Length: 99
Image 1 (cartoon, rainbow, N blue to C red):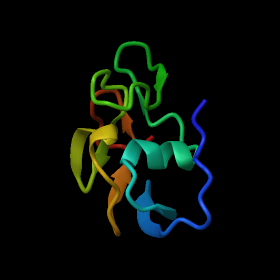
Image 2 (image 1 turned 180 degrees about the horizontal axis):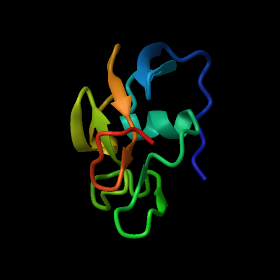
Image 3 (image 1 turned 90 degrees about the vertical axis):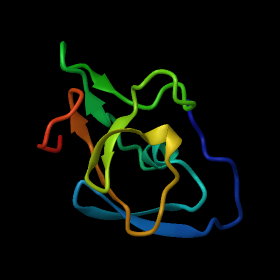
Image 4 (image 1 turned 90 degrees about the horizontal axis):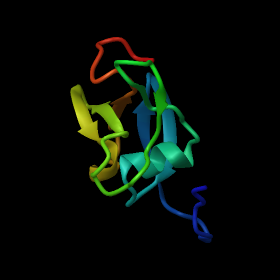
């Protein structure tokens, strides 16, 4: 569904996803970076444990809630990637254990 636009050689930034170093293009949202890495699901729902991934990409649906630099329940589509950023996937609305 989502595809990265052709780019000659995007500048990359290194960050950390669930304890693993990864490199993603600069200037994109955390949600776009997770899609770029094919890191789905990024969380699970509290009621049915259903997997969720970024959906609307504009801050309306809340399917992209994630922990960034220790702060839980941030909308990944509303935060741009930054060098050294620590990202952890969440279970339900928030769980201290990564997926």
